[in-house]
Length: 197
Image 1 (tube, rainbow, N blue to C red):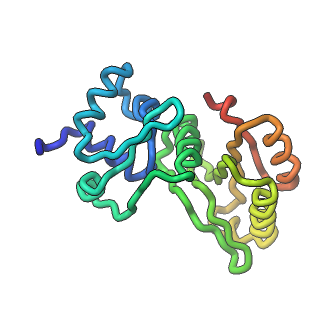
Image 2 (image 1 turned 90 degrees about the vertical axis):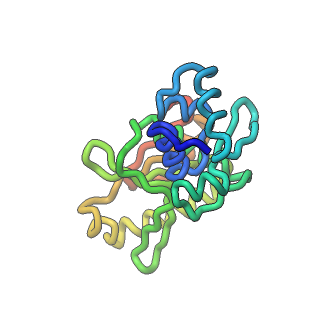
């Protein structure tokens, strides 16, 4: 195989960082231009990528060769969780590709433990992202109560100096309203997918 150029390596590294990306997301993150050009570039990377069609887009992720090239141990496969990740990555693009962005971070005070979908720094402050794709409101409520426990314990403030903004990304206005009700008393902001497109 030919050695990869810098842009090709950056594409593989973004897949290492973000797990799954659709073609439109790759176009935005890496400025790949129009659909035809993006398809050509991604075709050149086919020895390093796996992909499949889902609804109206093609989803890309690293295959074994791609993982070895960027030294990634994380094996990705087609799963029901992919759309959740695609939503998370839409938000990553929406907030301008923050340099400080970590997926699946654990926050704990020894009693309450939450694994947030992502935490990131924007405008000098840390934020927590939760993606509401197909969870039940009961699951969301339980997670919000764990965040409330973390707030009351003050453990997160000791780490950051403040309690980060809890940002939710959800699918509908109705779910947005329900989440807003559940988050009362917590620093929060809620977006729908329509808000960030």
